Amino acid sequence: MKKAYAALTTLVCLLFASGTYADQPTPWQATLQPAATPIMREIHWFEQYTLWFIVPITLFVLILLIVVCFKFRASANPVPSRTSHNTLIEVIWTVGPVLVLLFLAIPSFNLLTAQLTLPENPDVTIKATATQWQWNYEYEGSGDSPLAFDSYLLKDQDRAAAGKEDKSVYPRLLAVDNELVLPVNKTVRVLVTSAPTDVIHAFAMPSFGIKIDAVPGRLNETWFRAEREGLFYGQCSELCGKDHAFMPIAIRVVSEDKYKQWLTAAASDLPGAYKTLMAATDGPAKTVDVAEAQ
Image (cartoon, rainbow, N blue to C red; front, side):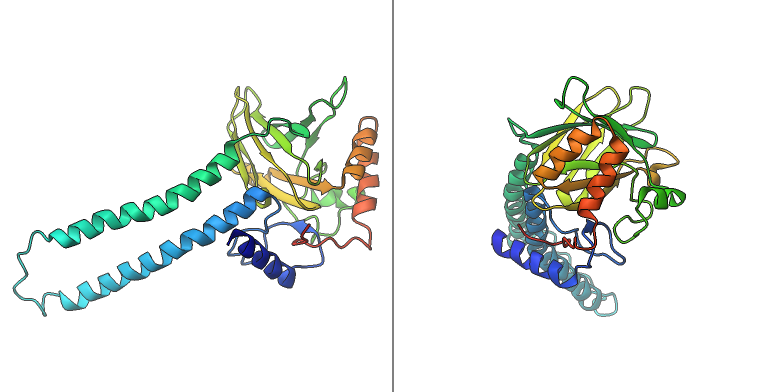
């Protein structure tokens, strides 16, 4: 059932996908973003699974309210019933919700276990530190002097210099100057914290199915494995101050070869490494779709 739903989701995304390869919010969006990780596929499935309970229960309660409003209104029942107990109804409204909660609890616990069980040997470890209002990324184990850089919201006046004028790929208020670059089909461990003198932030990436708080003085961790290349957007998801809405997260997932080339070049020339990577991924021939399946 999960595989069938995943295939259906991919088909729908292919039908409505644009020519860009950026996963981002869309106008009038009413559903979740296309899944890019196994965890997000599980979240998609669980959302649809819960609807099989939510919709019938909502309709049933609506019908009961309509019946009560018309059948038991004062004009139709001038003398109200004095019934105070009904054993059958009390058993039903006790056992019914218990069974529903049981059917919801088992898959939700399985999903939480998958989300919270961290991989023992991740391929890449990233430390993300939040401050008002930017992100700092550090690549753990990338040498004697680990690669680290800040990631700010991309301002409109800086688009031309950065080569990011296409707002369909680099949307306003979501694009950044320096994306977090990671390899496809690799397990990534993310250590998340906030500056000691700062406030609580949150690292959230909808297409990956991750959201975790960045707490001052505390190191939280999460993980993901992106299954397709592309440019993915998220945001800080905690109310962290006046510029909370201007603290985006951008992750560029590329092939392992491109990632290694970028990592080597970025150690000595970060702007040049980004320009080379963008030339390889944003060229006219590059049309990786938002719902491309591996």
